[in-house]
Image (cartoon, rainbow, N blue to C red; front, side, top):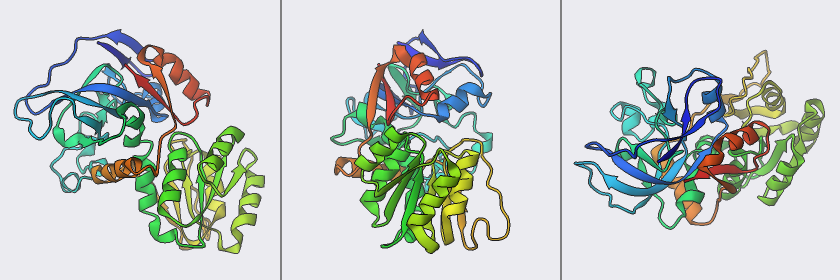
Length: 342
């Protein structure tokens, strides 16, 4: 089978031929329909986070192809999403379905498929436990693959902020990429708050408006963007700011536009640092650094998609074009989410 492999840090991925795996007892073989191309993959490729080689792809969906001995409750052909963060499965948080916050994460050999273990950028992948499968119902697996991260991650962040997102409140979303364009839809589906979208790309801002953003602001000039957003939110400030970039300019911007008793959520991995001084961010501002989401929340995300409330904007590419797709991602030439299909 074809597979997109991480070899070592600093090198582009390689498309290689591998034997089709066979599920061991307790495992499930997935016939992959699609694997999302995530910006965090660039961190995996650029930094020695996990020893290689392994197959990339942590945002996966497909059909059950075979069951290892002892696996029950699933049958061949079932359409499923693969829950991405693989915890120990035994600690308190894993038992509550929040494997994204596994208490044993520091001692795990990998954090999931595509994150140290073989992921879904291949024709087939091994899922180590059926607990990691979530049924997709009527959804097309290739189009639904991004739900397992690009939708789940903002959903988790937004759900935790719902008590701030009351009628009359303002929420600011910075970065309208793979996660940000899903955040806009989730916010419109779940909250009455007025939504202000920010990005340095006018095409992405137009996309945000098409998805329901009430206002858009180009953030390339940070000082001007702060003034424009402050003009919209007034003295109250934004109730919630969601930063899907995480670079120094975007973190600084968010810290300057939130109000008192607000919430500042940093999701992006852009390498920025939140600086603190008296009343900066404002007093009462809660800062959150969420990671991915729970298995239960993935079920809720899929239910939203089945109801037609959210939909990933997907552009599909064959596995063989993986190297080019990653380069396009680096250059900001992917709108919505790229999905590799076998």
